[in-house]
Length: 78
Image (cartoon, rainbow, N blue to C red; front, side):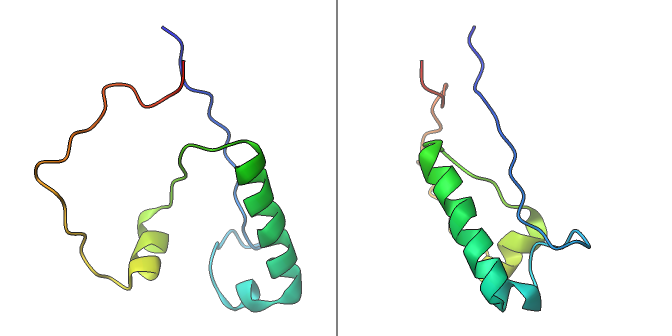
């Protein structure tokens, strides 16, 4: 069985945080644009955020899940 190819790119401050005031700087914007270019260039099928970042993005709202949604058995390309 062929396995998916996984690459982890993390955009963070020197202290390891991935959100904060530093994200509003010109330098962080430039790096963030480059980060997005990598994702596009590698044709990423998905990306993953941790719990804290997801809560910040969703402002703490709980997701409305579709109970009839199907999860594919295989999610990577052959």
